[in-house]
Amino acid sequence: MPQVPSHPSLQAAIRHLERTDSVTLARQAELSALAAPTGSEGRRAARVAELFRGAGLRDVFVDEVGNVHGWHGEGESGAAIVLVAHLDTAFSGDVDVRVRRSGDRLEGPGISDNARGLAALVAVAEALGIAGIPLPRPVLFAATVGEEGAGDLKGMRHLFARDGLKAHAVIALDGAGLERIVHRALGSRRYRVTYRGPGGHSWAAFGVANPATAVGRAVQRLAELPLAAEPRTTCAVVRLGGGTGLNSIPQEAWLDLDLRSEDPDALTHLDAAVQLALTRARDEENARRAQGTMPLALDCRIVGDRPCGLTRADHPLVKAAVAATRALGKVPELAAASTDANVPIARRIPAIALGAGGRSGDAHLPSEWYENEEGVLGLVRAVLVLAAIAGVPPSP
Image (cartoon, rainbow, N blue to C red; front, side, top):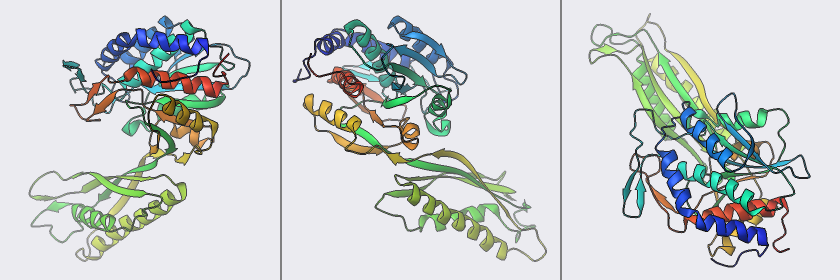
């Protein structure tokens, strides 16, 4: 183990994490094998609540939307440190989530994202209780629902809407890795765009405004939008659909859009350009329709809106994460991503997201894998950052 702070309780926590590394890995595999698609996280939440109680957390409960809560310590301040990991996976309920072992590798959908974060959450809770680290602030351990995809950070939004929750800082444990420190919240707006028209027989009704053609016009316009490189801003068409048969002009056709940026002004500017492109695609198709036929209608419905922002690189929370990463012999990488940390960052609460150690690949694919190479260091880093931001001195 590289040189780390010498406070006896911190050293005791590290020794416990090292001794129980295989237990943490087994919990990770167990949790990964409990299906938790966004919106159906109940079985996994119930198991995490049991693990929270076993780790010695107090006042453990599952809230109205499915988040699991558990508290450590009383502290001297009402502003808590929140340590969080999301329950849900990016996979639907019909995906086989059984975990397979291939040598040192665990394979299974969600084995890293975010079974690793959840197992780390429990391990850190257990280590705090056993080591007796004198934290001046209480710590809320939370496992949240709805972080992935269409969940739109539902659990985290609810967590911060609860009466009485005051956060001094937030640390999200998400997936694997040791170098990345996510301090920039990548914002996104997601739309289901639908064009509707009269439809009809592909020969007899030819000449009516065609929703599928409007979708094609929209896709071309969107592909040609000028996008900022700094701050990086993206616009992706991610799904297309519509129609009922090979000989019918559809009554409706649709596309799904994912707009992203680290900067709220850039995201707003992009959104306006996208809306204009969609409207012009409708108008162009309507201008070509046969005289006397019905025009197309456009419906643009927002299905996701993740806020953006940042915790400054010189903030004590980010500096603590950088110092802990270096103390473990790693080179810190400051990064942007969309995580549970987006919500507190947008509320001007200091927040970061950290990997929980080890190596992983094929995220969001059924072939996702995890290897526990230096996995324990991810747990140690979480404890060191937590202790530093709580005000525990590095030595007695």
